[in-house]
Image 1 (tube, rainbow, N blue to C red):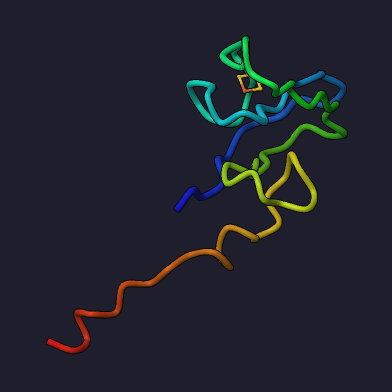
Image 2 (image 1 turned 60 degrees about the horizontal axis):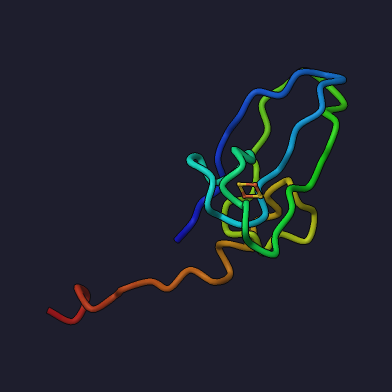
Length: 82
Ligand code: FES
């Protein structure tokens, strides 16, 4: 499961959120989307703070995590049957 990544954002700074999942950290664009249909999502941080950026790419409030990844998490509970 792809959990969110905590990053420190600087107020007023422009960031490029990775939408292709190919960047080295999975959350900020590093140009790896080249030759794909994807383009990064530009956003400006509104305050100096840590933020959880979406890595599962299913959040409804990208680039920020909204907890959607947890809804798709499959738990392996077989160990309870042993
Ligand atoms: S590397 Fe993923 S959008 Fe640029």
